[in-house]
Image 1 (cartoon, helix red, strand yellow):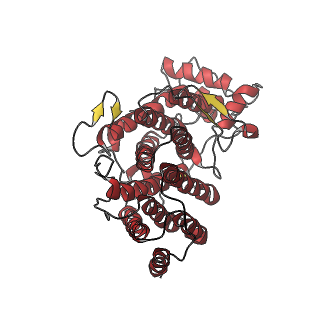
Image 2: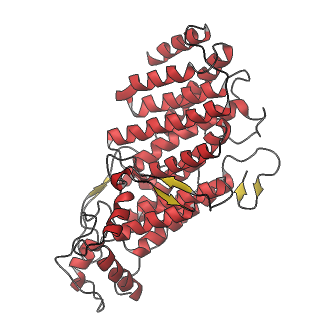
Length: 431
């Protein structure tokens, strides 16, 4: 029924029964990328989605928008590029902005059907920005087809049904049940083998490196030691349920910088597709690492240090984390750090420079106050360190997570959405 309604609406638009609009242009195009990503961010907040689900939805949305545009513009003023999932060709007379809108709409009504009416209204408003006629009708039909094909292709990717790992016991083992472990085997969007980025086990409890990280988090992450600056940094990057989640913040950073750089529609959809695929595939390696090693969190480690057989560590049964929580998944590795490593790597590669300054306020920024960063890597470093300041992770887990994200990001840049013909790379800037 929804498809029939959509076809009728597109036909009405083609007949000129909607509000006429100004001519197409790069600003209108990138605004569409931003608008529909903001809608996805809002859906994640409203549904209180976890980071894994959020990353998957963001990737589906941006893959659909990229493939819808790429199927039309490849070879027409833009280099012909590989598809992410759905190969063209699209209609040669199709409007790429209309295709973007319809593709995004198709994905969001599938993942968030309760707000379908909102997405319908946004689609209609965006399509009204394009001149009525065959170009708009053809582009919208193609985009809707692409979006539906992306949804179908990901329906059996392993993200459902939800699976859990039971609580563990003993020194070094995470103590709570946790769900979402099916993501350790989810089919990736872009990388060939997520297992290639597994970091191996954390330091042994008797290792001097473990003792050093233990001592650091015992001080920096201690709720009993007032440190307003450390608490504010933790809160800035905390991003719990009800926020857009860590993957969403890197999408927002990308949209800010992309807008500042006046990206075209084709450039913008390629940027967000590369980024969101890397973020989603980072989830798989991160979840597999957590599931395999199920390492205990600092709160448990510090309270029960008398069981770890390390003469350097000292137990403190009264210790509590500055962040106010033990943490809901195993400690090794930090998911915030993994996503940040991937986000920084992809954006630095896309813009051919890491030292791109920007200002950003996360969903959980204290007082909504933005922070300024001289580079993508500086933001990623702070995001990772915030987990130590909150008492939720050891520094070695931050470093390993950053490594996972960078590895995934580098592979995505090197192998996906490249030019079909001619030179595809210039130094570290995949083309």
